[in-house]
Length: 231
Image (cartoon, helix red, strand yellow):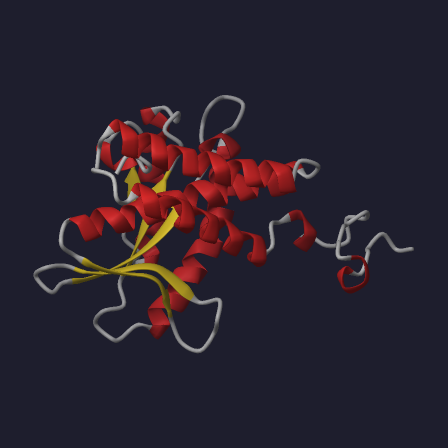
C-alpha cells in the first residue's frame, strides 16, 4: 500500500504521502463542474433586470452554491479547498464581466480556444461596437495569502505567481493573429481587501510586468467594477 488508491478500481484517488502536488489541487474536471454549475444557475438570473435586488440575490445565491460545492468536496484538504473557492469566485467574476460587455452592445467570445491544445483557452475576446478587438485574461488573487506579518506585500511569492501567469499569457499571444496579440491581465481581489493594499498590488504589478509588455488592470475593491455578482 503506497498511499495512493487507483481511481479506476475504487473510484477515489487520494494522497496519503506528499509525493506529488497534483492531488493538492482541484482537478480540471471539478473546475469544469464549477463552471457548469454557475452557468446553469445564472441563466434564470439573466432574465431579471440588471441591478435590482432580485437579480443581486439570485446571482449571489449562485456563488453560494458553488462555494458550498467546494466545501463539501474538499472539507478535508484546506489547500485544495482554498483553490476551489478562488476558482468559484474567479469564474463568477469572469461570467459577470462577460455579461457586462454584452449588455453594452459588444460581442464577447468567452473561453476562446487557441490552437490545437484543448487546455489553451483565453478567458475573453471582446469585439467592441466600433470594431476594436480586446483580449483579456482574468485572475482572482487573494491578497491575504501574499502578506507578510508587517502587512507588506510578499513580493517574492507574488513574483513566483506572476511567472506562471506571464508564461500563460505568452502562450496565448503566440497563437493570436499578428497585430492583435496584446492580452490585458485583469486582476480582481476580494472586496474585503483594503484599498491601500489593492493599490500597492497595482503598483507592484505595473512595475513587474513592464518588461513583459503585458498591460494589467487591478479592479479596486468597492468600485462598481468590483461588484462581480451585482451586474
